[in-house]
Image (cartoon, rainbow, N blue to C red; front, side, top):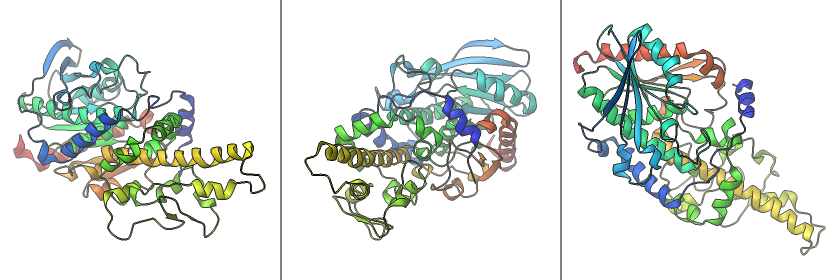
Length: 452
């Protein structure tokens, strides 16, 4: 299956760069990874957010068909990992859109925001108001950290400054979703579900892995991990790789310490060998000389993934990065130039160091992204039959090649495919997203009528 031309064209219109600040502070990444080990295990999280966690409504507006309540609460992440959130993001804000007259029960769907979805108007207009009219389902729209009211002053629009910001956002939204689900339960709403589009779908999926009860989940235009989004998808072109490469080269803590904390080692892990990079347009592995072999402090024999056969400790696994220095030297060195030639030194600097560093940075990006976003690194939702995934066949933003499918990670979930790409689905298929939500809620009510 190809990729959508509209997706590629739309990305070219946007000139902003992602992660201009780099990876984030090493100490922050360490704290995030340690916290991920906790939130990745549902049993360890039962007491993280109390049953009576305080949530406040501070404004109510009456509309023709609904009431719109504005509310807030302090993000539980601030209590559990103090100082990891920027000051502007500590207070979580939401909008609760409730029908004036309920059709049946009091169903509520929490909707998390996708990339660039600041404040509430977009979700309110495209999803929440139609859901009230069509099915009588209320929506609670949570503002993502780093967006809207919660955006740091030095952040440019939706462009997160650091890679670590995305992980902080995810950790916060997992806990904030739990706080809101507990609050909605206390207030007598039922059934409760979660959804999101694009990044919002990822975040909703992560939140549901942590919820200890059956719950409808409808992730739209998202998949099993965010690593492919930033390494092989069209958004990879927006990543500020030069800054990431520079930090990775200068600060050895990323290579020597952070990489030791990466635990995910599934069939699509960066630790398993070079195959995923064959799908990356930034690499040209297929053009290496036949029978070529490379040796350095990490040994890579072409056509063979080092260390796949046999058990290896974490340090050995961390060493499986793809140093292509000798490969690029083999292809590009000019044997007729004396070793002291400035031209030769420039050639070696250009051909040896930068491409190798770029590959290492991509590999490290995949590693940290899989650690914090790969669904296989989190508990399986309590009832996967309540999950309806909506995916675009030609999505260039969320590549599915080379990563585990959600059906493999969540056996029993349903996947519905739309024709076209990411952008066209977002613009023209909101009705399909809503129908999937209605179907998931109906499925829950039929299966769990006694849980009310």
